[in-house]
Every structure is written in C-alpha cells, then in structure tokens.
Figure (tube, rainbow over the protein chains, first blue to last red):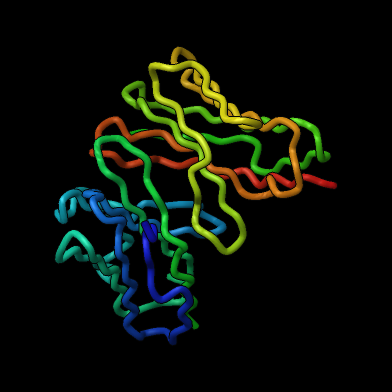
Length: 113
Length: 113
C-alpha cells in the first residue's frame, strides 16, 4: 500500500489567499484525521471523520478553516483567507478505526507570507 | 478529556547507552498507547504500541512498559545508535472518541557517536 498520500508537500502563499490541502487515506481505512504541527503547540488534532462523517471538529481554529470528505478516498482541508499564523505542517492520517493505529502521511508544509 | 504529559522534552545520550522517555495520561478509559518516531521532514511513524491488557512489550531494541494504576507508560531504547536520533511522541487513545489519539509534546532524542 502507498500509505496516506498528501498534496501539496510544500506550499508558499500570500496572506489572504485560499489554501487547499488534499489527502488520500489508506484504502479500507474508515477514519481520517487532520493534524497541525507547530513548534509551539506540537501536534494538534483539527478534525476527524469516521465513515466520511465529521465526528469532532472542536480543534478547528476558526471559521477560516473547513474540511470535507466527499468519499472514502479523498479529503480536503481548506483555509480561506490564509494568515501568517497558519504557517505549519499539516498532517493527514488514517486508521482502520475502533482504537487501532493511526498512520500518518508525510505532511503538507505551509508557509503564509 | 484525555491529557498526555511527556518528559523529557530533550534527551542526549552517547551511542550504545539506553534512553528512556516517560509519559503520563489522565483518562482511565484510555486503552491503547502507541509510540511514534518522527524524523526531520517526515510524518510520525509508529514504532511500537501497547494495549491496556499488557504490562510490557518488546521489539528488538525497543520496549514499552505500562502501569495502568499509576497511569504512566514509558519507552525504552537500548544500545542506541545515531539513526535513533529523532523526535519521539507518545500517545493515548481518547477514551470517549472513536479512535482518536491524544499526543504528548514530543522528546527530541540525540544520540552522539
């Protein structure tokens, strides 16, 4: 299996622009997670889905952030408008669910200038 | 909700020595405790995990111990090698969720040749 696939791997954008991060989970996994990693706050859960349904979005910083999972093999995390404080590494992860291991992608490195 | 504390935040050892990283958790309903290794520029990778019905688990040079009564678990790396240098994260399952993990802040391990 190719693992969790994220794109883009790196993005530099100007403040105010829309950013869309994409994720393809491992086939057969029914839970999908979006995490943000910064030096100051470590790994933070933003939102997670179970069977394509958002279960907990309490970690989403504010209304500028939105996430969708239109089908079992694709999810997006959108930031609109982006701000410099959104600069971080965003990880997508997936799991078979039911308290099993979470597998991470390689991350999307976002810089907002 | 679950809270995970991890210590130390940085650890430097000489090649061949042992390294120990400790974590505590707060939710007695947590039953799954994985450890991840994150190398520079990559996503966290699972290295070992333990469930609450087991007190210790070993995999070659890596071992994890769990004390449910005290709500703490530890990672032990023996005969450390320079390639063990990375950031290590502990995590605990969120007892009230459908498979989410709560992560510690990470330990940066440096193994000096």
